[in-house]
Length: 426
Image (cartoon, rainbow, N blue to C red; front, side, top):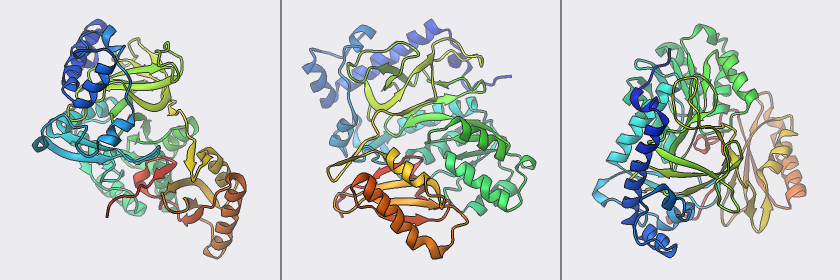
């Protein structure tokens, strides 16, 4: 039987849900009109006040990450400074990192909606919730922690790495929910198997996938090796959580009272039909410190269904097959696709296939590759030279290649392939 955190809203008839969303949309647009950035941008499009209808809203210009980056630290802030409570920073995978500020009321709302999403993803009050995501400037760790506490879970703030200790905690504390990026779920399974752990005999029931593309084969492997039901999700640091999977495993639900999601043609900006792939555009409805109105995420996806789900929830669902619109990266004037690097890395049997590209303004790009567990140290120097030579041959760029042991890739990256490291003031 399905359990709901907010049963009235989660199962609200669609007409009533749309009406609720429209009221929240008018409210956030009026709030945004008071910001110099929006007032200038909307005035240039012919608006003399905030839009008051869906039709007017659809004529608003889009915004992109640049408005957040250019306004950092306080230029894109819509509440008094003394109301601010937290800062997050994006990874910078598509350019300069963006700072995201939250007020106390934003954080409270985030925990409330997060608890609702966790309930939908199989988590229940009283669960032992082990968080392996990084705590720091990356939003996912602290946000997930707060949501689990709000739901009524016992939270283990394990953070990333130290996999043997993670498994000890799972056994000792009776962990029932494990939150990790997909590759770390598999790392925990691998280390546990090497330690002789039978996961089917542990209380673990739910595996939460965060911050990574989840291929069907990866999903199947995680569920089988951990003997847990896996639930996917989608969100960004700028917008917060966007979509979450329910027990029906038929797409990701988008809460209509949290955000308004559009899918548009990335070239024309026109909305595409349900089932057609386009760019995901998000309007946050209950984030008031840095409201995002028609924010272009740069992600490619599609609306899966507008019909009620088998779980009983009436909110829109999107496909979990989400990717970046353009993964091309310009390094020292040369366009490089991470997929090109991935092909090189996956052709080396000594490497696991997991990697991270780090780009700094004044130095060579670094490629951090994860070794397979059986590789001996004596061969690492030769492997570094071979990978660097192949990268030079295929991309024309000189990479500084670094090798790390399994599980030692920087955890803050989530599952992102590229991290831009800007020149920051000392």
